[in-house]
Length: 90
Image 1 (cartoon, rainbow, N blue to C red):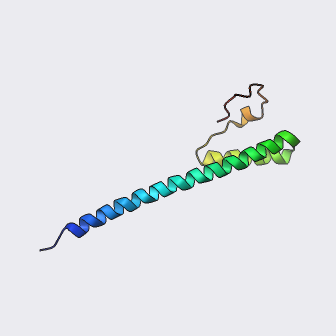
Image 2: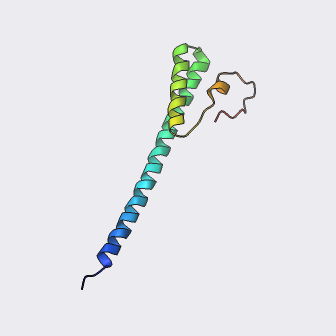
Image 3: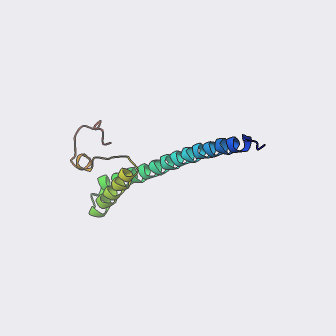
């Protein structure tokens, strides 16, 4: 008679591994988002200081990259010089 336990154990191991991979992917995405946000804020700060077109394009590119990661930044509001410093850009 065959023992069904190994098949059950394989299923548990597969489920645990799948959960581990999901957790790792979430961690990796969070790390990438944080890294891109830091780069975005540095680029935006540089653009505020210099007003150079090159800096503005870098801000737009990084906002686009953040959008691909699921973090939307309203570029129109970002460059509209809203006098309200508490305006939410996300």
